[in-house]
Length: 267
Ligand code: FES
Image (cartoon, rainbow, N blue to C red; front, side, top):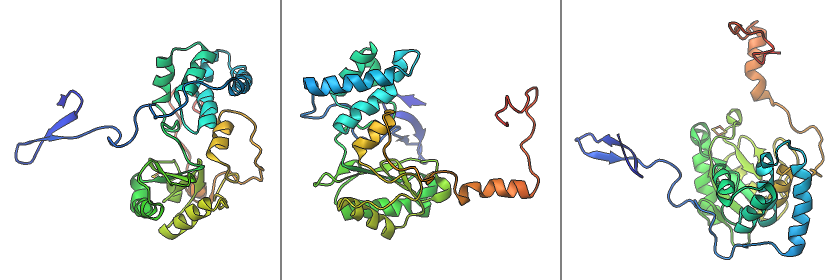
């Protein structure tokens, strides 16, 4: 049973209607409208972005396929998606503003408000929450003096809660500019954000050293990643534990009827 704009309606215990709100909390920004946001880029910025956009678009057989990396590109310019950035993407790809906004608003990696030098995401999905994610998020809000999706006054840290990072085996997980900090505690998370505020960021548990949010966005756009690759990535011990048990016990994935193993992605 549903009512327009309110989501499903359930009967309460005493037969009263109970309204359940679906979607993001109402206090979270949900539009690309920020006072003072640039409406267009100055000629020098426009010219520089056009060169970079051309290189990115050239990698795709159909240029509209380059929308996601171009959104990262303009996010790297402004730290969030501005009218100038959305308009730039539309112009470069021959899309309407509505088409660009429809895609941009679907993905939470695209920011709707100014973002600090470091975007700190605390996973508060079920497993991380019970393992300490909720406590970490509550403590960091108090420690930094900001609410969800807010930035410290010095512009160094934006704090937000995020949902599962697909790193549940290292719960509770905190991400900074999309790099993993595994098995966090309230204390270690405080030390982490303090290192960000002094611009001497701790090294992620896995992956490359941190760079700024804007630099990260440019890397996600497909521009060169200048950070040293010292083999920091790859699956960790906890991730491989299940595979190890399976191997020790001679366990194998079942055959897929009517499909050979390579087709089933088992090669
Ligand atoms: S629940 Fe936190 S990473 Fe999956």
